[in-house]
Image (cartoon, rainbow, N blue to C red; front, top):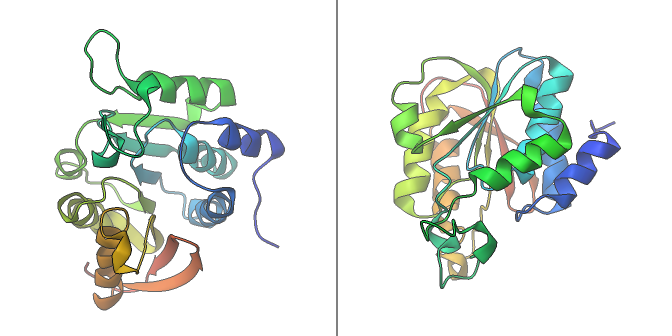
Length: 216
């Protein structure tokens, strides 16, 4: 029977600002519970307002490990003013730029999960460059340009432990989705072609892969 989040965790996820559908969230939680058995941290790239972080933190709490979430909190390309996914409520009224960090912190506090999450604020490649600890799970859910998706993969996939899981979100194989999901799709194909990762499951745009070999 698939692992399922407690009702209060699922409610916190559904109540949080963000874009991940419930079906993908449940698949994320199940993968995080499995990866948590390795006794290593669970890391996501792309925090936004903490919707998916709630599920990772809930799974981390159950496993007795830590969830780590990495984001500069200035929003990705499609979240900027004038774009489809822009939310004016995430703009700092004083600076006039996006700042999702306060919303994220409120999300975690309301869910009662602050003690189970380490939020790292900064650019993903910059943080990955000095990260030196193995991870039970890496969830790539950051920017959707080739530059950002490739940087996230090259920066973080090497840290997935043997038997650990690599999750890639917003994988859209159809070329019509060039701006929203083709870069994650190309990263997903690269992971499979590397021979280092084997596909475990597909849930809509979420891909779950397991490290079964060396390299990236």
